[in-house]
Each structure stands twice: as structure tokens, then as C-alpha cells.
Amino acid sequence: EAGVTQSPTHLIKTRGQQVTLRCSPISGHTSVYWYQQALGLGLQFLLWYDEGEERNRGNFPPRFSGRQFPNYSSELNVNALELEDSALYLCASSLGRVSETQYFGPGTRLLVL
Amino acid sequence: GQQVMQIPQYQHVQEGEDFTTYCNSSTTLSNIQWYKQRPGGHPVFLIQLVKSGEVKKQKRLTFQFGEAKKNSSLHITATQTTDVGTYFCAGSGGSNYKLTFGKGTLLTVNP
Image (cartoon, rainbow over all chains, first blue to last red; front, top):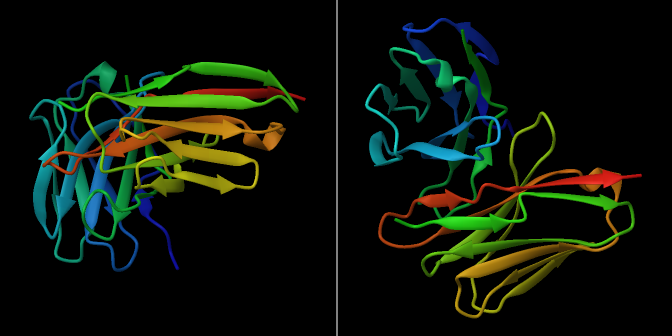
């Protein structure tokens, strides 16, 4: 069974640019979660999508947004990139409610210069 | 909002020594999960605890959920170099069903 996949694996952008990260959940999983893992700051919850709808959102500014498609894959968009957005962005999927086990993808490492 | 605190932030041990990381929640949890992230890798699910006072074992790893369902611990007996990584606890509770991660404990093992 294929795990959670994310693309791209690495990305370099400059301040002010926009970026789109992609995630494909495990087959049969309807929930997708996005986390930001900056150096030394642990996992910061960004967004939770389930059945195509945004269910919950972490303490991030509106320039962080996303969506979930009918096939349950998801995109994370970050506008007006700032230096502190440099981090590993992890996507996870689960069968449904967030209390279910979350399976993480390998992440996208974003560097903002 | 719900907060999950994890201590210590770092722990360095000699191979063969024991290791424990502790997790405390500001609110009562419905369940707690533990994840391990190897250096350069992504978090991998280890276990989920649901019942008050629950204890689960996986080989040298022992997981406990407190009686009040507000704290948990992970204990590793006789650490090995393969145990190196960051161990995260994550709690779920309340009406928003958001899984809140602790900041993790980075374990390093000296061979």
C-alpha cells in the first residue's frame, strides 16, 4: 500500500513569492492535515481538511491557505513568502476524525531566501 | 486552547541507559498518541493510548497514560543507537478534535 506522498521534496523561493505544495493521502483516507516544522519549533498545526472541507485551522496568518480535492488530495498555498516560512512542511492523512492515527508523508523542505 | 507540554527537550544517554520523556496536557485528553521522527525523516506513529491508567509495551518501550488522562510517559529500557530521534506525544480532546503535538524530546545515544 502506498503511503502519503508529497511534492516537491525541496523548494527554494525568494521573499514575496508564492508557493503551492501538494499531498496525496493514503488510499481510503479522507482527512488530510498540514503541519509546519521549523527548526527547533516542533510540529505546528496548520490546517485540517476532511471530505473536502476545512475543519480546523492553526494559528497562522491568512496567507496560508489550502484546499482538498474530490479525490482527497490536498494543496497548501503560501502567499507573500517570508524568511521565517522556511521549514519542513509535513502532510499527514487519516481515516477520518483527527483522533485516528495520522500517517505522515516525507515532507517538502522549503527555503525562503 | 489545548496545550501539550513535553519534557525534557533534549536527552543524551549512554547506550544501555534508560530514557523517559514526559507529556502533560492542560486539558483532559480523549486519547494520546506517540510518534518517533528519525533525523532527516518524518514522524512515524508508535502507539495510541485511550484508557485511563493504560500501560502498553512494545519491546523495550513502555507507554503510560495517566489516571486523569492529562499526562503520559514513554520509557525506553536499555537504549540502543537505533533509538535516536525525536519522540513526540500528541493529544486529542475537546470539541474541535484537533491533535495537538508536544514539541518533542530529542534523544541522542552515545555508543
